[in-house]
Image 1 (cartoon, one colour):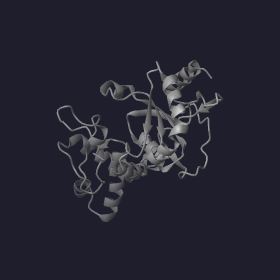
Image 2 (tube, one colour):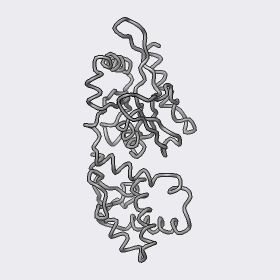
Image 3 (cartoon, helix red, strand yellow):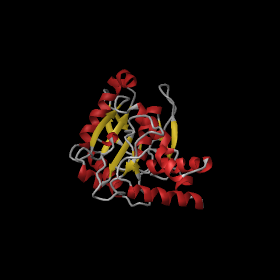
Image 4 (cartoon, one colour):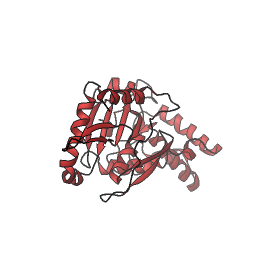
Length: 267
């Protein structure tokens, strides 16, 4: 496979319609001696996503959660390389990511990217074997505008990853599509509150304002976390989520005369 073929793969990935957003997995994730393999149900892609490690699982969860990510595909790019004996091999980077154009226009740090996700200890141990693959990826991506990045546990904050894992439980089809009349009423009351508040508010304060029984408070709390999972309401997410965590409307859900900060996890 020539570099032009890599460019064609990227073009196909970035220009597919909404009914076929990813090229599909070209290499099945296999059990390995270094880590635990995992699968997650992607709300963004509408299918099951495979991960080769718990670190990669956290990274894929973050991609699924992050509203700046338009789409991603795991193991969906094939990059040719040669080993030290000159034999032709194929390298399948872990994740290919496309960001939303509107977010990219506001944040120059966001660029279409190919990511390789590995624990730092594994990366050190496998570096002689992996380095030629990564060098081949850099060469193949040259001139495409797509960057190549290595991700280790040093780039994934454990508190943020834990918060995302928690919130993704509230981004399931049941929470979004199969709402009872009472849940719909709670969402309407929450959305009205989001449009009206002038300063950050905590989950505890929302419950005190909108629910007066234990049952209602329990159901309303689930809807609050659903709003945070959808980024209708924002939180910094670099501290553990609690009933005292400040929440505020996203930039799309408040009037222009009110200022709320960009959450720290996106800064």
